[in-house]
Length: 223
Image (cartoon, rainbow, N blue to C red; front, side, top):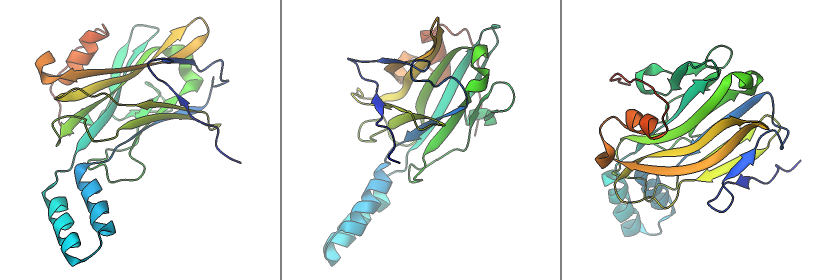
């Protein structure tokens, strides 16, 4: 059976109700995929024709930097509790217990076909008030331009909702991707694609948290 067509969240059509799509329970996977400059150069090297073409592209691949993007989720619950799921600080979360959101691994290159994935357990959606999906450059490229980053949310049934991280301004090293929040009709996904630069202040998580008034307090962390 063919997969259902993805619903693209765009500026013109930025929101979608999970309840109206029948996505009210089970797991929903949030996938981040991108193309690092090094991976793109390596693919070009494999497709190059002729000895000198292969040498030239191979040299370009060697000089291209890998890019480490980190996908995360800031969570605010209906009881007022708050937390974050991210690779930084090894805060990978859990699906079967609080916060019912988990990050599967940390893709540090962009070369892994499956990218990075978060899983949200909608069996506990009554506990969620807001889920803010975000991504930032932990290491590598100066901004998101040319990375072709795409985030796809996929339900157990195969419903897909996609957000393309486009129109990146120069030096934007972080992006609030989408805000999943509780409304009367249930959880609604809203496209954000709100970019942040280092000029917005130090500590990208703190900057994003303050921008969305999530009231979180942050301490330095490492991977």
